[in-house]
Image (tube, rainbow, N blue to C red):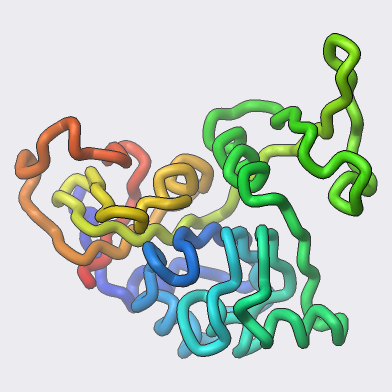
Length: 215
């Protein structure tokens, strides 16, 4: 199976109302070219799972500024005034999840687990409506797993099979999110032939990758 497709072909796989995981930290490690194409499309009413909402004019924050997002599950929004304004105006739902908890919820979704127990958020608004479980006399919040219809992954290098490597901190949420979506689309800066990567360099095995977009 040839996994390499164009950006337009990739964006055509997205539909209104989908839940999409987008890797990256303040747009570093984000599939930014695909984001630009999505902004130009008519896709709307999206739920986005991400570490942060980047900036109004950069990264996935463009989707929010363009009002294509109805809900975001994230750890912080402070760098994107568009997210803050829309949240305050009731135009977008923001579900805050502490960064480590967010990562574990995604990992749990990818691993098929029922959730993660964490003391983080106890006694705060993070705990509102969540189940508290006591283990050996200590209380924990049950944080439920996260999965998505699609994950958009930003990789430094992909081979033609979809084995991925990431440069430096661009790795961030990408390997976790690649395990936790029904459809995984990768935007790679460079594509090399299968067998070019050393096994120990591979951070995301090809079995998780459905399509590759050449940047």
